Image (tube, rainbow over all chains, first blue to last red; front, side):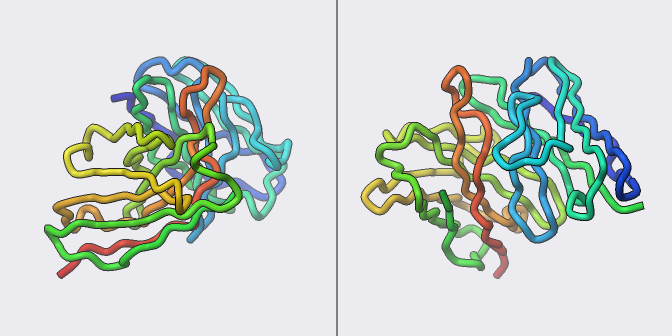
Length: 109
Length: 123
């Protein structure tokens, strides 16, 4: 099983600043990585797929990068609605065995 | 496209958890997508359960495979989850979602998700 490790577990950033979230895979997943945002009490929402492609309707302040085992989600000019939990998910294998990271909580500093 | 989970919110230990996901805005019988289930224990992360295609082809999380059955009902545009022999560890919010097929046509990422339904396992 591919293990996804996110860091840090909690990130405190001030509104208007930049947040950088990391996701590491235990083995290469090429560019087969998605990012999700989850607000309290809500379902996850797809932000990024293919490591760097924004989903429909996702603001341009969200960007994804990386390949292989190291991935980054960057959020610039943090807005109040961006403070949430973020998960990465790999989808590199066939037959599929999807795994998620444990999440990074982005909180207001 | 919208998905909505339904089913009992309380299940007794050792019994079978049964949930249904109703899809609106897309037809499962003609869709190219897969359909899946993901769960989230309280205050914890996400765990993939399994996926199904309109033909009935399924793929399950190996850690749950012995207890999971996912089926599809194209006539009612629904797919369902059964998890047998449940314990307190199966208490979670259960989400259904469409699984989008990516560049090489494999089912890849989950979008959109249903709102989720909390299932508590307790006597």
